[in-house]
Amino acid sequence: MRSALVGLHAADPTHRAVSRLDRANAQWVHLDAAAFARYVEEAVTDADGLDIVGATAALQREPRAHHPVRMLVGPDFVALKISHSYGDAGPVNALLHELVKAAAEGRAASIRPSLPHRGALLKAWFKEIVRKPDRWKQGLNLPRPPRPTPEPQRPWSDDITWRTTHSAEALVQMRKWRDENAPGVTTSAITFAAFAAALRDLGANPNLSGGIFLADARRFLDKGVDIDSDFCMGMWLSPEDMTDPATIHRMLKAELAVPRILSVMVLEETKIVVGGTKSMPDPYPTEIAETVRARHTFSNQGRHDGLADLPWAAEPAERHNFSVPTLCEPDGVALATSEMNGVLHLDATFHASTFDPSLMAKALEMVCTDPAGLIMASR
Image 1 (cartoon, helix red, strand yellow):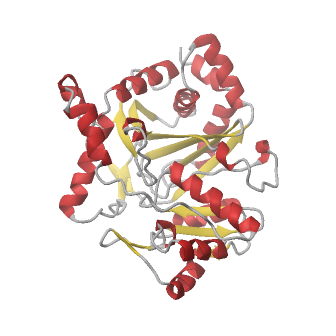
Image 2: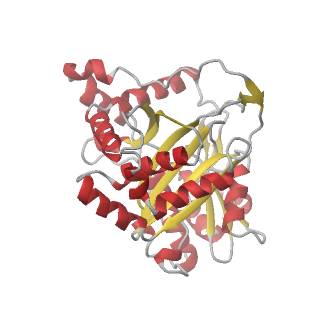
């Protein structure tokens, strides 16, 4: 894996994957061949006896550093930690695919140079909102989560963790239920609703007034504009019923018809320009409400079938495809969904100091075992 990256550096020493991340100044630092040869020794290390779960947990807890790409390599897995500065799920999967293929074939990785896309966001924002007066009111009305009300507090410390499961049958069940009950609804909306219902049924006291929904804004770019970095954003949205897939589907469809997501992204970019750098996350608090309501973040990464031709040692139903963020709010539960070769993969990230890990594991299992039952029980 190191050799694949060294080969990539030799071909393109300015590529983000082989550059150093200067977080303090929000810039990329390019290295010469000798410096990168030393740098890659730290970027790619042996898993040292850890299995895939242990390696993923180790990377999740590892402090943010100057590596945009950090890897633990085991005998039958690769664990990859990627900075958001590098990219979102699309570019990351492309990088992962090429690195694994190159390492397996004993060659240098070959990834096209990073594409300049300065102004693409502003152009999309002007085209979709500014130049359409009928969209001004909605397009500039930025969604905000409700302000928390003062509550009694208890001591708290972060203990980020995650639980995962996958199923080769869940998507079949979801599509069958959809065809019979809610034609046109996406399986991601069904998954989100079923997970909210599972947390409710298990007594996790979820906040069903809304949640953060992540979306890819590339759909609003001009034809031929290809962004190979991070172009996703999460927004607080409030469907009428968080346990009804049809309601979630209609809300997301309406939201993307007038892309407020672009306004949110422009605002965030403006903050970075004005502030000079992209700030680091605030430190975790030392207290949390005595009665916690689970706050959802939903991320659907779509199909990862592009990874199908990697040298897998197992059939699709037995493969693991984890997607685990390294940051989560104290009262947050971040659900990431993906599909690979017909298999649904689910990951829930949260703090074990807030929520019982066994309860979260049970919720994921309920979604994969009987998603239709969870949804119909809410009607």
